[in-house]
Image (cartoon, rainbow, N blue to C red; front, side, top):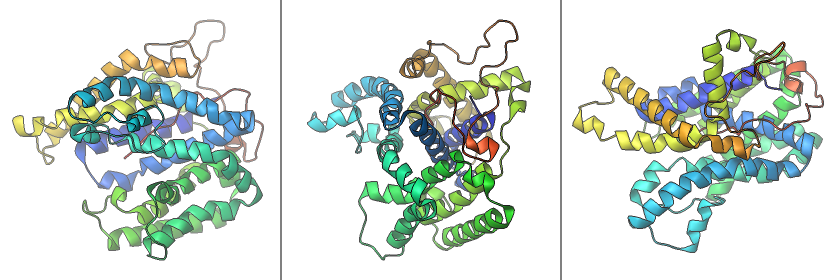
Length: 372
């Protein structure tokens, strides 16, 4: 059963990602570190799936993740091959991006968000072993990615491979999702959670403001500050957030929007950046600078409109991948006696009850994706 509070967090994160990529406002990454929050939500869902299905959850998760990528690749890979991308065996990475798939000049920008899928795949593949370790030694397992990243950023380790560096940066958030699914975060007393969150936030802020990047205080340019600041957010959002948020569905329109973004999270994520890049020339043609609020607002609206159009065309692939009946616009309330919103039901996982419980025997309905 769905937890509408988690659905709301995912919706806010996706919207924030799109707005950030249009505006480039670094402050947005500090106000709401969406990417790490989404990794935490994904980790929670992955832990629930492993609890239900065992190692077979890895195949199920990949089955739901890859088809939407293949649709994108079917459009953009031929276009890149026709505009200078060399044909090589590496092109096959577009089928399973365990490493960065090749792209030409314009494709590398328009499809830059693909790196998230690379990390997501690595985290999914590592989850069975990570969950086994987490259940036996939760605190050391949780601390390991942060220790690895801190050692690398402080120069105590040689340059890490990209994949290992990303484990240090984001796998801690994924493991916090494990803790959330087990009910551990909610069981933490305020005497523990609040000081830990404040310490992480203070350490992260100190590192961010003493190590500004090329875009100022943008978390995406500051791995260690990003990890610490985001961990504090996750502890509060998941450890002290409400068990659910049924009020989301008091407005049928808003509830439907939240549902659509959750059911089409992967499509929105994959397709929004090409439209952001395509609309960038309007800055010069129309004179919409990043300091022009009206111009930025129009660009945000146009990107969402274009994403809505492509989502209507290919978003149903996410339904097929999840073995649901394809829908043009998800979330329609089924008529019938005592009908209720299909997602407005009480959660049954440990995050809601404060203790680990056996989840309902069904797979989570979304692939949690975001970036930025």
